[in-house]
Amino acid sequence: MAIDVIAPMPGTIKEIIVKAGDAVKEDEELVILEAMKMENPIVAPSNGTVKEIKVKEGDKVNTSQVLVVLG
Amino acid sequence: MEMDNFTFGVTMLVAGMGGTLVTLGLLSLMMMALGKLFPYKEEGGKEG
Amino acid sequence: MMEAIIAGLGGLVIGFKMLFVNWQSLIMLGVGGVLLWLGIKKDCEPLLLVPIGFGCILVNIPMSDVMLKDGFIRTIYDAGIDTELFPLLIFIGIGAMTDFGPVLAQPYTFLLGAAGQFGIFLTLMLALFLGFPKLDAVSIGIIGACDGPTAIYVTSKYAPHLLGAVAVAAYSYMSLVPVIQPPIMKALTTEKEKKTVMKFTAKPVSKTTKLLFPLVITIVGGCIAPKGLPLLATIMLGNLMKESGVVARLAGAAENEIANVVTLFLGLCIGATMAGPAFIRAETLIILGLGFLAICLDTVCGVLFGKLLYIITGGKINPLIGSAGISAFPMAARVVAKVGMQYNKKNYLLMHAMGANAGGQIGSVIAAAVMLSVLAGMGVIR
Image 1 (cartoon, rainbow over the protein chains, first blue to last red):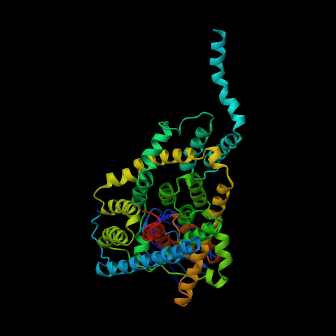
Image 2: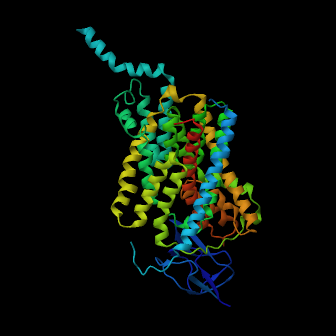
Image 3: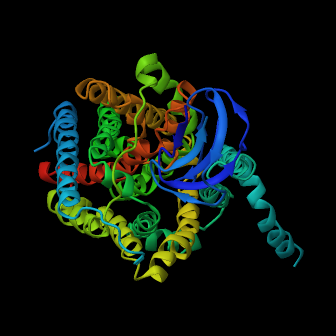
């Protein structure tokens, strides 16, 4: 079952912490999203494996855009 | 006419805070209206 | 001839002698040093504290004539503080820096920006109760706007003798927001409220709305509270210049060059109002205490209003964002986002808090403007 991790707010991808294939736990930081000059860690909504990373560092994203797919 | 400090304080609290709330409430309504009147649409890369 | 030489040399040591006669000045030299230390070593509002600290030292050097008639800081003071020009010029820059998008996207956050101003009026009451004259109490209350330029604007007009204390309180507490607010926020909300997840679904705001916003605020706000029109107008002018995008040079100058120059002059002047005998009084400590209370009360009222919204909306609004309804932008919003994440990592409150915070920025200006107009209405000021 794939879970989409979406951007909760518009901003810029500052850092991608995980890579495809990583096993992540709930609340583990996946991506740092910079919005309004503040760095916001985007965390995993549940345990899983990183299936796909849909963005790269420096990308501008909109609200609800898929950042990472967990499998 | 010199009013006493208590009357002054209460007046400021009621009129001042009340006025602030009402003004901001009014502004928030007007902004809502503006948001409805001019909804966001993709502005085709026409940046300023 | 020998006598003349000795008398002449005597002129060089008189300053040191006076240093021990005016013990207050000696203390204030130390205070100036502490302000510099805070600014330089502790990175606490260095842009302000460095010139303030230095101004404070300058004015407390015995026989210093910088603040006497035609003294160099007095000249700046008369030109910029007495006329209220400096806070207004700073406001153009703040307007050009602030993105009001988040509050426009969620207009209800304007109300949170109003609730965060309660501290102003409660502190005003308390100051009156403690025996401060009316206009002094108004100036002390305005520290609760948590907004340096607003506080300076009001105080320099109606209680200039308190300017040093009020300005220092306003700026130092503003930088202490990340320390002052979290305990209050945590104490006033339940675990469940803190964990309330808010999704950010608001659509972006159209350019037309962003352009009309400063005009509407200026005209409507100005009609309601003409006494505060200069405050409102300058911040909105800055914002209009930014949003219009056609005068990037002017907006850039307002937020960089003009703001920088004015900050330097403003800081020097504020520091120079802190002359020992006038500053070292019980009154100053009381003002600093009341100012602290004002900001705490702002936070309390903001969070309580947030709780009210939580109840009204059936648990959709996280009360924590209420504490961002003050003017310390964008610090207060970041504090909310951080505290929210401590309790629920999947909760991203930043955009909501930014809305409340931008609302608070407008709110503090509106509150000051309304206050001045009410005072004028009552005939207390002209």
